Image (cartoon, rainbow, N blue to C red; front, top):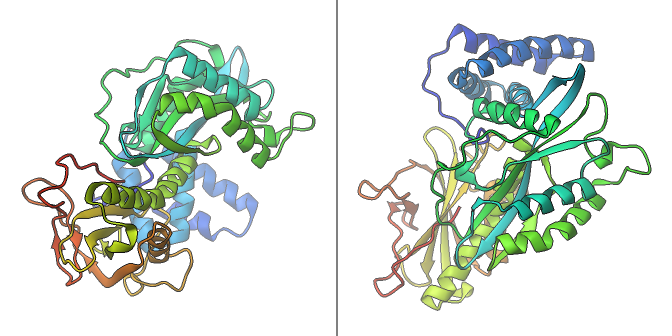
Length: 403
């Protein structure tokens, strides 16, 4: 999905330059009337690219603005995401507002997190819970009968727009969802990962989509809606994810919730790794040591965390903590702990919450190396080398991966 950083090698084309210039102009605007002018310009350019499935130009413009003007990047990313996940569709002479929703489930387990087709009863339970706790009056809904893993989600703004268009028609007209679900990619086996139900919600233009937008007596605060959603979906999700612990996030706009779910699962990945090593090696969390390093070509794109048994230099396991579009770390602050929101602080806090106290932090930027033989990511050891993470020979041979 288009929530991860892109590394575009495309040279700046006129389309890229125009997108970048308009985004910078919108970011510098000092009034709403000027905002609307630049937004309209950007919308026209972006919609033309979405319709022609020209994702490369969008990615190149995002990459360029990210490097030169972070505020312009935010502006451009917001515009692209809005056009990909929402639209206005006319039906029987009346306009309808449509928004693509992601319904995240943050799960972790010692076994395997299921994904795949949803039964009719699961779809019906989800629809009933959305209407009961989330949706405003006079809304219509279309739910894809599939429980998505992150690697099965749309991977670009263009793909997301196509999905939004398909679901918009199905929601408004109560018709069949025309999607090919039989050739989904295989799900990578991970023990801490989000799962998603994807839906589209539609309402007559100008009327509320959500209960927190509505007037009394329909109106309720987001927190009340979240509690109602969690209560209504507890049993259906328990049936979908046997043997898993999970948390339900509030159904919201697609890109916002994809980012939120990805971020929420990162500390759970630490907990899942520690639990796995405890059950596999019989080592308590206090008996583990961790090494944390930032990896990327020019800037940090992710942090990799190595796990070792205390007193040994051998890396027995590794976890990746990815950074997303709206997160950045300067190369002179890669191991900074002074800001509660900086990645290194969040990583060390997550490790300590999982019971690991011995954490060594590298200040250097590592090359994002992979193993030449198996393609697995390499992880930092205490001496500053990137090495293969390998369990001892007498450990179970089936190794789960972590997000």
